[in-house]
Amino acid sequence: QKYNSHLVRKLLSRQMDSRGYRIFNKHARSHERFRNFSLVSKLDSHFPDNTSDLFKLCFLRKRSKVVEIVSAKDIVFGLTQTGVCTAFDRLTSERICFLNIEPDEVIRSLFYNKSNDSLITVSVYRADNYSSLKCRSTSLEYIRRNKPNMGFNLFETESLRWPGFVEFDDVNGKVLTYSATNKVYKVWDLVNYNLLYAIVDAGIQEIKISPGIMLLIYNRSDVGNSTTNEECVVPLKILAIGSGETLKSFNHKIKPHKKIDFIEQFNEKLLVKQENENLEIVDVRTASIHCVDSTHFMTPSAFIFLYENQLFLTFRDHMVSVWNFKGELVTTFEDHMLWHPDCNTNNIYITSQQDLIISYCKNKKQKSNFGQHRNRVLSSSSEDGSDHNDEHDEVSSKGSLNISDIFTGKCLAKIVAKRSQSNYQEQLRALDDVTALYYNEELNEIYTGNKLGVVHCWSN
Image (cartoon, rainbow, N blue to C red; front, side):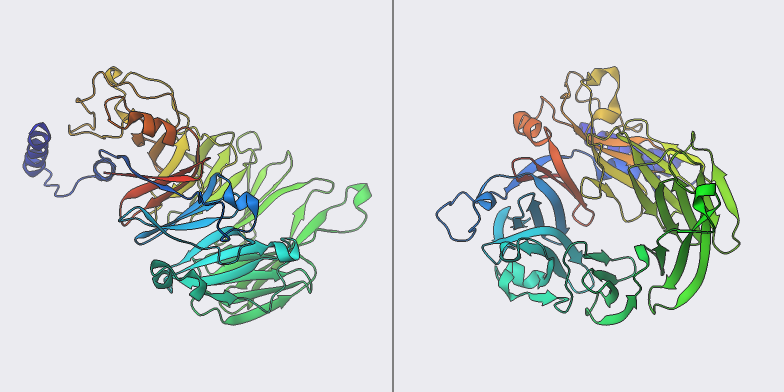
C-alpha cells in the first residue's frame, strides 16, 4: 500500500507538472529498472560425478572460478578458468548441458553470434599440447535440446597456433583471424563465415578494428640514424573493413628510444601515446595533432570506446574515467571504485545505449539511515530515489554491484547484501568475490560468477 501511494503521488505530480512532461527522465527510468534487485537463483557449473568419462582431464572436475558469462535469450553460459562451459536454462535454473564435446577440450572464450543465433566457442586440446585455437559454432536450438555435438567447426583452413588469434567483431559483423604459420590475416563474414579477403604483409605489427575501418600498424622504422636522435616513424594504413580497400596510408612521427604505450583508432581520430610523453590525438583527415599533457592523461590499463556517444572510457588503478576526443575529462564517477584492477569486458558491462556502466566495486560498511540512498538495491518509492523502508538496515562490507550513469558519474543503484533479506548470508557469499559479470538487457537480470564456479542471478 505504501508503494502504491508513492506511485500514485508520483503519477499525479507528473500529470500536474506545468511543463507537461509525459515520460520519466533517464535517471528515474534507471532507478525503476533496478528497483528491488536481489539474488533470485544460483547456477552451479561444478560437475560432482568424478566417475564420469565426460571430463578426462582431472582439473576439469575441480571447482574453478567463473571467468566469463554470456547470456543468449533464455540460456546463460558460464565459463570457468579451467575451461568448462556450462549452459543453463534461465527459466528453470537447471543445467542443460556442457559445451565441452571432447573429454580433453578446454574452452578459452565464448561469443554469442546474434546474426545467426549461435554460440561460438574457442577451444584448445591436449592432443596438440593446447597450442592451437579451434572454433566451433553451435545453434542455440541444438543447445536447448542438449545436443552440443551438432555444432560445426569454423576456419578449419587456418593454423591458429600462438601467436595466431581469432577476433570477433559484432559491430562490423566480421571475424579477423591471424595465422602465424604463414603470416596471413583474413577477414570473414560473421553471418555465413565466408572468406572476404586476406592481407599478406609480414610488416604488420598489430591491427585495430573500429566501425567501418581497420587500422594496420606496422613495425616502427628509423629515418636516418636513430642514435643521433633523429626522428622515427610508425607506418600506418587504414582499410575499409568490408572490402579491404586502402583508404589512407601515412607515417606518424614518434620519438626514438621511447616505448609506444598504445596506438588506438576511433573513426577519424588516432590516439598515440609513448612512455612519459603527451597523448597525441591525430585527425587523420587533416593531419592536425592535439596534444594532452601527460600529467593530465596518464596511460590507462584498458580502453573502451563508446562509438554511439563519441567518447571513450579509461581504466587505471581501480578507477574509471570518461574522455572526449579533445582530450577533456568528461566524467569521473562518484562511487565506482572497481574491485579488480585488471579490468576487462568480462567483469564490467556497458549497456547497448552506452549510457550505463555496471561493475563489481568496493563497498564500505555504511548505515542506510544516514541517507545514503545510492547504497541500496531499491532505488526508492519516493520521488528523490531514497528508500524509507530500511532505516535500520546495515549493508555489508563485501563488494557491491554498482550501476552508474556514464555521462554524469552518478551512482544510480547499488546491489548489496542486506540483513533484512531472508537470504542475507547467501547474498554475502555471492558478493564476496565476483570474478565475472553480465547484464541481460532483455530480461533485466544481472549475472555474476564467483571463485567457486557458481553463477548467481540478480533480478527484481
